[in-house]
Length: 337
Image 1 (spheres, rainbow, N blue to C red):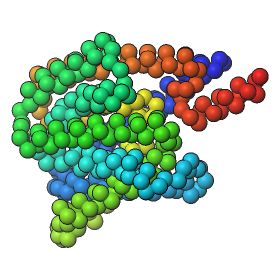
Image 2 (cartoon, rainbow, N blue to C red):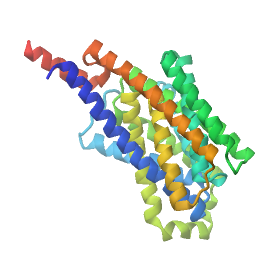
Image 3 (cartoon, rainbow, N blue to C red):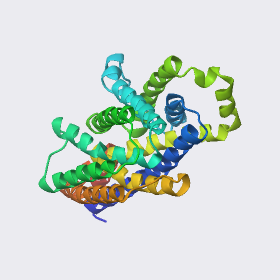
Image 4 (cartoon, one colour):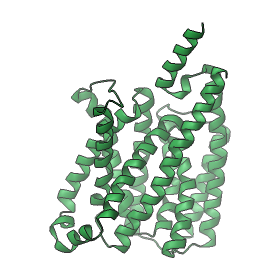
């Protein structure tokens, strides 16, 4: 099989694997978080969010200590503060804000409000010179923007505080995606190594927030009983959070942060359907039409973005498939010569 074909096949296989892992884990996590906050009335979003980074760090640490993954670098304190600390802080904010929204909106409404996220991420990538604007991709982004605006205009519930939290969350989430793409691709950092470095920062920041704002999660007996009555729920949320982190980093490493955020719109459609089916959330015709337009914009954008990736693979033969695969392919080519 020609090297270029192998590169393209590896690209698709890895992309589908990581996106599938992320999609399955994140859909389940959203439903579990909503259940814990809205149904079980454990109204402590930072405490719930804290479990994911902790288990992510433990998984990455085991991978390193077992010899499965070898660290490629030793970060200085200054380098860590410039690269991984911002990623961890943005992740902590993003997780906490994402769960806090369930205090103000139903599951379906939260996903509709998050549909604007690809536009924010795309704007940041273009502003930082990490992506280029083309007419077809711009058309897709415009459709996503218009569809989101139409969907949100049909919402039957509205909270000014919740909406402000959404806007702040979109900016933080966009920053997180761009920072991850910069670390993984510009710094050539392997996925497990990135998880090992970022997770402690996210956990410490969330733990600090819990100590300041959510001490009642552990100090009040009623809240402690909720944790002890359903330990499988809260442990499961932590495991799902770790799986989402692995899928997120893997997908960003291969597909890019904007494509990843665009893919989130498809996942959101599944979440909205599940919320209507299991939680009885209400949807208006305007919301459904707006989301259809958003998904159509995503499809258009993703088609042309994939074409760009394939042109890069055909031009380089291997550069788009990652540093490890690149080294392996080069070695095989040398042996063939």
